[in-house]
Length: 284
Ligand SMILES: NC(=O)c1ccc[n+]([C@@H]2O[C@H](COP(=O)([O-])OP(=O)(O)OC[C@H]3O[C@@H](n4cnc5c(N)ncnc54)[C@H](OP(=O)(O)O)[C@@H]3O)[C@@H](O)[C@H]2O)c1
Image 1 (cartoon, rainbow, N blue to C red):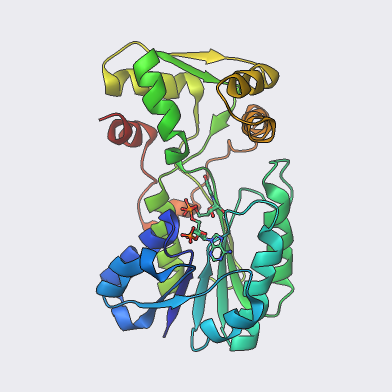
Image 2: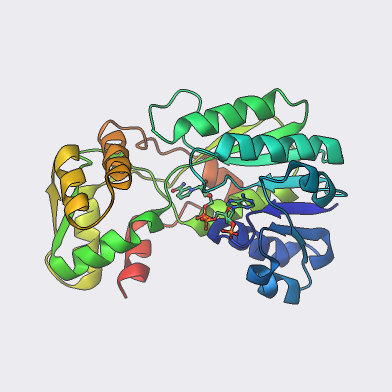
């Protein structure tokens, strides 16, 4: 059984391949990357590295040949993602891939999260493709806040526009373990998993975790989305990026990421890494 992983030179994809290497023969793993130089470590471990671009529909037909199960790691090129994912799904079908697993976002088909529409379109296209499929709706990576955590540990202030909103995050490695479990396991066809940490946390709790880990005072300073956008622009971000970050915070304030579920624990046999543990690793 050949297992393929796209985005294998990225942070999540690389962790999935590393997890697969614990239980699979390296020659049964295919890492699909845009730039093989970035996957030299995987090639050295015996993994087959193939060069493939989500933009290159014809090339993907060849690249996906012989793969039985494919993890499609969602692209990071916002706005282009549905067209790119469609290319991969079409090519998977043409190449005879039997099962495609896709990394999506919480409640992607009904959520107001500004990132949801491209995931919704992909999920619906995949479900209608005739391929066996599994959807991994990953909640936030706790590591998304690495820079904010480091800054807050220095300044003593955690500024965000998340109100009293909660985030049911887990670490990338937790989601990677879940993807590896689905790739190597059976009975996941047609499943849509809502993957999250065991407990949602709010920004008061994040500030407290930073204070504990850094051994300093740290307080959450809530601001409005407009104020956050203005702050980020004053710090040099362009209006589009600042507005995007502020809109994500507003989504969190509205509760779009608050639901903690048991799906991750069921797949990996342990809860996601708790907030405090990840914050400690980031601060040290
Ligand atoms: N749940 C969350 O909190 C969260 C946060 C951020 C992102 N995400 C989503 O989850 C995905 C994986 O996260 P991550 O942390 O691993 O992100 P990442 O490190 O940015 O990895 C994204 C991967 O997608 C690959 N890629 C992008 N465009 C491509 C193309 N045209 N053809 C082939 N490969 C392409 C990148 O290739 P290169 O290595 O060549 O750049 C990279 O390997 C992201 O892409 C994004 O969709 C989720």
